[in-house]
Length: 626
Image 1: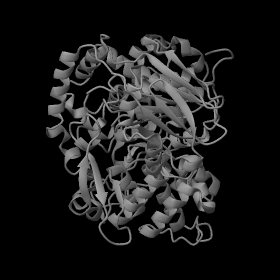
Image 2: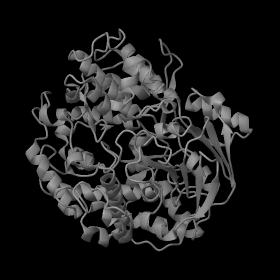
Image 3: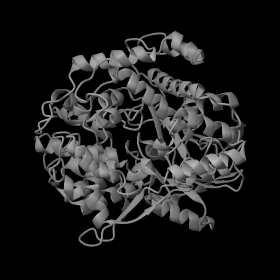
Image 4: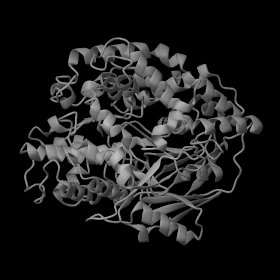
């Protein structure tokens, strides 16, 4: 079967390691990836643990398809912890090659606790696990770190996940990168890794990853591989996600200048069409992938000549239109600097745009910015501010590295009006004022502002609902999409491939069964997705971050109507309709009006053990409760 049945435990304080068996009941109930990771997080952490405390576990989790020939899923892994940004569940996934190597080393998950006295990197060579000195890697970029470790270990096929300077300096928006451009991007887990003095994890596996029914599995993945060459993945194979720029702009749903406008007058200059015509040099794919989506850009001339980086819509939007910048070469350089320092490009762009908004409104002056002219549209200011966030240079860099929520609180003077985050995580590139199903989905997301927790923007954009209304019935849409995405992220299927599973959960259940040999129905898979959402909610409640008061929207979304001409003009999310949406969502979830899972719902999902977490409105566990 495709599970290895083993979990590696590493204590960085003592240097001790242990291999323990995977509970196969949990494997089926939580699948793998983020599901298994979140369950391990709640089991191996104590309430109220600070994200930077050595006892906060950093969990690397593979999926049941990792390490196999499965297109897009065979190359994947997830990382789960408590977030320095939100103080709730942190989870993120990445593809590339690292996940397959970790699985072939023989592990379904790695649970890392403690803190090393010195900067180290972990070397996993099948069953051999070593902690090696990383003093010489301090301050190095993830790409430099990867190259040095491969040379040091004398094996080009070693795969490496690592942090940059931002992670070392505990920036709350620091990410982890593997295979040069692939990122465990959101929720600040690069900072958790840095807090443990862990620079990198290198993995080399030589073990087979078997599947239960090889012949039928091969036929199934052949079908999926062929579908990946078809119309459902056209966008990713051609223009890539930057195609979204003009699409969102036409809908007046492209946040511009820190969500001040919903359209960008320079959209053509930063569009996917413009990018591919002038800057994209090649498109590459991850291990086992049938479509290829990595659009690699190269700047051929000008002040940023030679800059090479992967470009996706979200980072392009955050560091481009949302900062009012329409010079694509500068945006590419800003993305490159995020990769160099190991920063979440989405959060970083939103943080810079927040600072620009504060500057334009007189809350920040050149005295606080050390002379940087932080007006919207200034590309040099954009790049310099990214560098400062990555290095925590000066007052400005240090305060912005805390993220928009904490930065706004520290700056004061009304700065909170310009901070666009949910639960402490910065908004991605969808103007929620005119995408109201998405607004509800973002608000209730257990990891904070996130388009990848439900894809609730999809019915708005496709026109299957009235996107300017938030009414009863949207809760069911959000819940179903959330549960499906939980399954996808626990199997760790690439979301770009989600459209090739024509029968949805039926296809995914068959995939799981063929790989693991464990019978799984679509209904069981759906319930697993629901269980994962509830266990994540329970973790957030336990940490005081998971009730109705946390399911909010930023001031700009609720108080500043869209000013642009057209159908979207005047739209924003008012409190009355937002409350209708929340009530509807909580009811369909089987939660109380305060957003807390009921005892009946917990019993239904096999989560009765955790009932102590929800015994009062504050969500604090009773003394002695698990």
